[in-house]
Image (cartoon, rainbow, N blue to C red):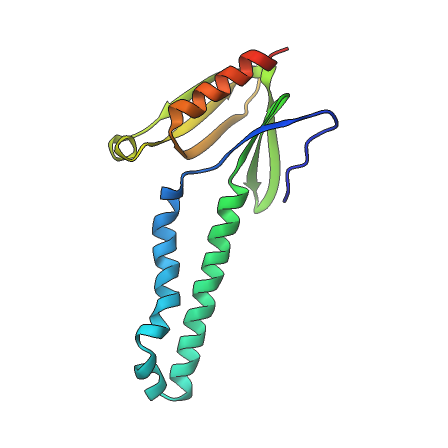
Length: 158
């Protein structure tokens, strides 16, 4: 699903999760991709069954890589001059949830010890008068992102 701004709306920035959130899934997918090459001769020694296992491992690895890429691309939060839009999944159906700048109450940073050492943290955007709370789980340099959002909010609050 692609974010399409409304007429007269300008996209100011895109906030994506940190690359560090992809390390564990990439290692898992990389294992499935590399496995058939490491054990190529052992798999070929098993005949057709070994070739099938190698092909299945490659297929699973590339499918996981594609899913990781899709999740990272769709995990973006779009900042426009009128609102903040985030793609959420409700019952496995993607849906854009947007919060206008005039209802944004606060932007908070949540981080643990390891996240602080890695320079990442989660952002929580609270909206007054609404049950919507936007969450960005892991953002690189969350203080700069919060300052950016507060600056945009002060410039575009109507």
